[in-house]
Each structure stands twice: as C-alpha cells, then as structure tokens.
Image (cartoon, rainbow, N blue to C red; front, side):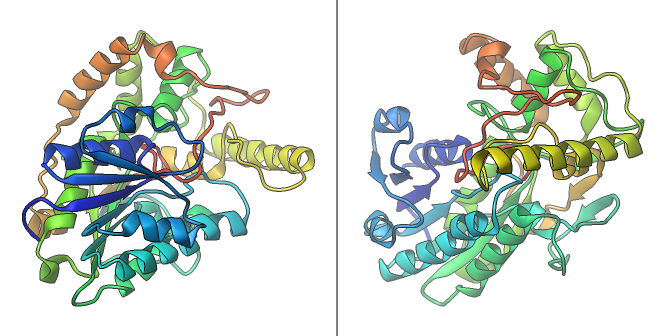
Length: 380
C-alpha cells in the first residue's frame, strides 16, 4: 500500500492513539479519530485534517460509520488495566475487536493493524526471558485476564487476514513518552516524588525492553503501509533499540525531576508477598464497596510486581526485516524530549497529577487508567 490513505485510529483520545493521529498526519494521511462519548477530544478537534467521530466498540453502528471510507484501521483502543471482570475484558478486548474487524472488512478497508502487547505471551509462572522472538507460542494459561484477552483478540486479528484484507499485530512493550499521564513511568515518578517507591528488585538486575511512543507509532505506520504479502497474518515485537536495566533507569528518570531514588530495597519474596496481600485486600474492599467489578486501580498487584521484577527483552529482527523498523527515537533523546515536555506542562507534579489513594503500607500510589485506550505502561 503506497501513497496517502485515510486512516481510522481507535483510542484516539488516549496516549498512544493521540500520537498515532499525529504520526499519520505528519506523513500526509487523512485521519478519522474514533473517541468514546464523554472523552476529551479538544486537542483532536484542533488538528487540521482530523475528523473526530464518536463511537464505541460495543456499538456496531458507530463502528460501521467510523470505518466507512477508510483504507486503514489502527486499532489501539483496549481495556489495559489488570483488574476487572471477565465480561469487561472480553467485551472491550475480544468482542470489540471482532466487531471492528467486521466493520472494517464490510467498509472495504484494506489493512487492519492491531496494537497488541507482549503480555499476550505472559505466563503465570516463568522466570527471566531474554531475546524473545515471534516463534514463542501463546501460553496454555495466562497471567491475568488482560493478557488472555489481548492474546485472543490478537489471534482473531491474525486469522482474519485475507487477500483483500491484510491484518497484522504490533506488540510494543512499556510505551513511554510525552502526554502520558497514567502509564507506568508517571506512576513510578509520582511514587518517587513523594518517597513511596521502594526498590522492589531485591538487588536483582531486571533487564527489560521498553518502547518510546514515537517508536511505537513508527512501527504501526510501517505495518499499515508495508506490502501485504510481507506482513499479512503476522505479529511483530517492537521496542527501543536499547535494552534497559529497569531500576537504575527509574532512578535516572527520577533524578531528572529531582525525585529521590527508589528506596529502601525490598527482598523479592517479601515484595511478592506484599503485592499479593495488597491486591487481595484491595479487591475485597472494592468489590464490597462497588457491588462488583470496579475501574479503580490497585496500588500494587502481582502483575505489576512481575513486570517490575522479571527480566523480559524482545528481539525486533522480524520488524526490522519486514517493516524496515529501526527505532528512530533513542532513549537518551526521548528522555530529553520528555523533560522538555514536563517542564512545559508545569513540572513533575502537573505531569503526574491525578487522584491518588495510596493504601496503608503500600508502595505505589493508585492512579486512574482509562479502560479502553492503550497506555504507555508496564502492562504492555
């Protein structure tokens, strides 16, 4: 697929979705931005060349109207939190994706790019995994409902590939960068700012792949335009060019904003036990108060603990070969740009602002996470 096209971006009012809109505009494409009723679309409406439409993954009619006339769909909307009912996750991540696939195909779209996650391969019990590539199979048992439903949705997308309807998936991990107010990096910096982030590594080196939002956008747009025969039915890991030693990286980012480093150091077994206790207590309290599932965010969870203490790096050779992906934004450049943006919005307190409700004796303050927009956080 070559030349300018009309692109539908779902989750367009969110962190990654908003940057996908910007990236598509920068390349000269027309953009239709799908936002849910009540979402803040002020910035999107101010952008020349963007058509904002209101709709929802549960509303087939709105999806049909959104997809009409679009040659490409970039599907970044999802429920990304690590808690909630099976019905909530399946409705947003599985059924919603199936509806959008059907709407895109019926509208004559030629390309469907699904923003997936390496968490689609995350197992309940596993150790460090370095250099993971796309030959890694889906697990028999996933870590949580988020991981499971992202994997199921990804498989539906890949199976939908057809000669006139090319589908593929992109798996960015730990997306970070400007305009992220609810992802893993602002959460960690917010906790450091108030002295409530211990070093949960237990002294272990935790190597991870992260993905600056500009790199994620580059990969998604390359997947949207690459030859169909090269990408159809495939999934691609995408990440920054650097492997990151996570806890020194967090301390380095905190230092950019005069935050104390993570401390004290907590032994791994104690940290895992603390995460399990906090998560269990939080679920019991919120289920009792809300009468069921809730969209509030737990201050610490087993999933978060796993992401912060398991090494996980990803081989991006397939994306380099098939997409020409080279991670255009370096980590050092990304950090400089992030610092400039944070200064521009009023400093670290403004960046990390949001209702915080730290549970007694826990480390990481709770923050709201939109339930259907991919965010740059450790859940990716």
